[in-house]
Amino acid sequence: MTRRQAQCLAFIALCIEQHKQPPTLAEISEELGTGKGNVHRIVAALELQGHIRRWPNRPRSIQIIDPGEVKLNPDVFKRVQEYAEASHVGIDAAANELIRQSLGAAG
Image (cartoon, rainbow, N blue to C red; front, side, top):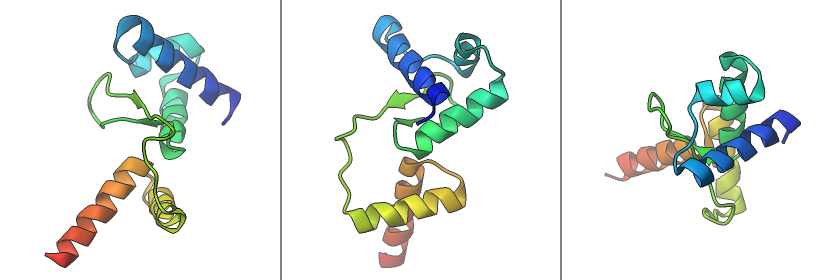
């Protein structure tokens, strides 16, 4: 995790603790003193690394993931991670898509 990513994650945690809701991307941008494009990249990296999850096109949808929340078999996690990187989506989105595909193939 980069210094900027750590700052962003700490700010998200602080907002959730103090205000009972996550910050907007604009608020993160103001706090970090950087543009929204950089914030998008930082937040996407945090999501890809499994530190947060968010729902696209929903304001204030960032959630911090408890490190012990998801325990996957290492081989399964590697497949999900590879799919996430190839598809440019977060870990949760990749896992959900792979499950959907699996259920569709089974049904």
